[in-house]
Image 1 (cartoon, rainbow, N blue to C red):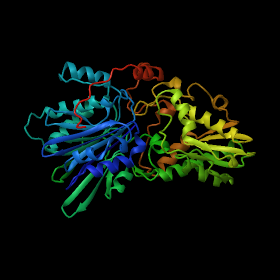
Image 2 (cartoon, rainbow, N blue to C red):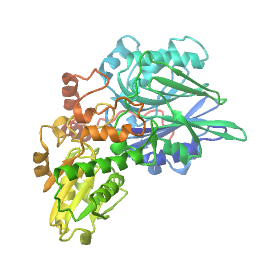
Image 3 (tube, one colour):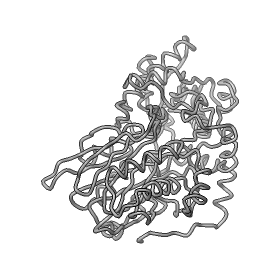
Image 4 (spheres, helix red, strand yellow):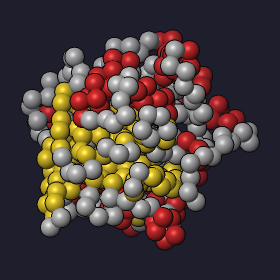
Length: 503
């Protein structure tokens, strides 16, 4: 999972890109990068770390130009080397930089094709570098000294034919401007906006609407599945559907967990969707445990708060904040290594004992992935004096790997894989456990936009919307990206050569 942003302005865009990435920080806390263009020259700064740590004053002063793109990252495919921080750059044709949110499911085949047929070298294990080179090769087919929007649309049409999986992309082409595009299934989000200044119109593209609003732009809309949106250096906007077949099937996990609640995604308010999740979950608790003895509902901050409040109201039970969150600890389920996740839970949360003592507590979380956080938090509640600890998840059991840009490659590392609800409850230490029904989760999201016929719900039901995910593929990514393999890669000092960094 990553956050992307691109801006074409009438003055320097470095501060806008920085501010936008700061707003998108929840989408990636591992690395950050910005590249700008001025007078045909690219200026890049990227490194591991939070936005505030990667960019110092000297770096910001060096990021010159009226257009640029930015990226915040959690590593999924690939590794956590700073060399894999984005944006990526390729010099031919024209000079292209690219930032990508998602994951290509046919990356191995594409890498071979790029070497054997396209004669392009890939320097990292990142599928984003592969995507960049596919786009560059398709654009090079135009065989022109200058490029226009029609050449770009033709190139992206070629990208859609070659690339499988999930990708929301912003790319900058030297001498032209910025282009944003989205895979034909619209799995990962991207939205664009506009504002009018005295010098003319400025445009922005970003993963979430909240980044656009924070910069003072007005939303134009979501980039549609298979669509490309171009903005040239003069502020001319053009758009075209570039996929032969497309259907909007956005990742429902965005609404469960990833996105900020103040974002609008594919015309769905994330906040409203999570409110409905809480209401539907309360209805299920009343069905399954009509005679419950819950004294208090306590959310696990931050993302479960929105669901927990309507849940408590519908149950007629007190709602209380029982945990204080240290905001400077990253999201735990995506952290590499089980030991690190366990350690970080205790660092991240602290219980307020008086809210737990001698009470039957219902803890509400947005989801349960590996179970590490849930197990630790339940024990914290008991240590704080809770008489009984119940647990409710606003999402169904996560039983299958997500291959579209979320680092859950190994099914065996998912607590829901191969276990029923009673077994999961016992494993995490809850007195009882209630999961959201998948039909209710889909209903909670679709109510915001009834035009969406289907969602990517693969983490819950194993139904992969791209249709190309086989068991062999799942076995391969499990071998490559499980916790043990990631730990071995981190231990080995085999860093990729860092290039194209101005700092």
